[in-house]
Amino acid sequence: MGDKNRALRAAARKYMEESGETSLQKAMQHVRRQYEQGQHGDDLADDQERMGFDEAPYADEYEYRPRVTGTAYFIAWGVQELLGLDQVQQLVQHGEKHGQPDASDPITCHLCDRPIDVTREEVVHVGIALLQGAQRPGAQMPQEVQLPVWTHDECGHTRVWSWSQLALARRRRNLPINPADLPPKQHRRGRTPVEDYYVFTMPEDSPPLFYLQPGDEHRHGLLGFRADRLSDGLPALDLSREAPRALEEWSIAADRTGLLYIERKGPGRWYQPPSPWAPPPEWLAAAHYHQGAIFLTAPAGSVSTQKLDAGTSNLVDLLSVSRNDLLFGAVMTVTGLA
Image 1 (cartoon, rainbow, N blue to C red):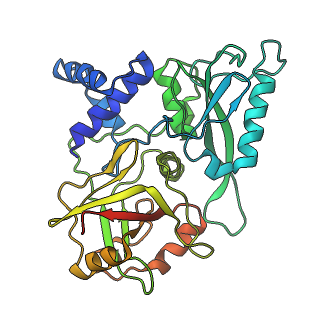
Image 2 (cartoon, rainbow, N blue to C red):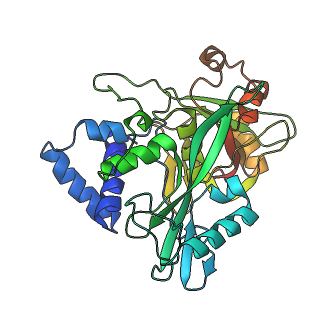
């Protein structure tokens, strides 16, 4: 999907979040009118995702939604992945306790700064913000700090955020922030983005593998990439400890021209390249035999582009990336090969 369309869709989602509009089609029409009138310039570029797909989704009807008393809690994708079911339930119980009108330490909405009264709210959204903590001895990545993010339903659906993503969302709502928490200002006009890299390999005794790596660094850094993939619903993988899980809601569409796009049931197309990917015939045959493929993705620069260009990279190159919780993926069905 083109850069302009991705930016328009991201701007439309932002407009929906801020205005309360529930129709994506109407929001797109509104943003297109603004674009035609010259009201969108750098903002559209700033909202573009770097990897060819739209920005990570917010909560929707596919979310885990535990109900306590009269309040439903939307738990953003990735939160249960990070915390586990027990801690998610504890988080909801915390909300029930501190979301009372007379609570001495009330929970507050991160997108309006007002207290959340669970005795009056039908829906409360719960996400997580990722912060950089202290450097761990011998580790490449600093320790990660995770803080719950609560929002009213009318203020906007939540997700897994990096701290800079949350600061940017607050600035857009004219809420107080520390300017140092914002991501670096981008100057992308006139700059040609680096193409994303992809590799097809065929490990022994397993489905074929499709590795996709963005060409450009994520605007919000490694935590931003990690937050987006968790919000997308992709689990992190440690290849030294586990094999990729099969996720039925994910699929890769194909036809006689090659692989067309990756999608998730509900949100729709997640990544669509400018032209179909063309894996080797034996890779497609293996995907047809296994009825699926292993999809992996990691931040820009995770694997040497020289190795990727030469086709000499392998899973060993991704082991250290996976140990730092920066490798994401799953076994996905490949459709259209019958």
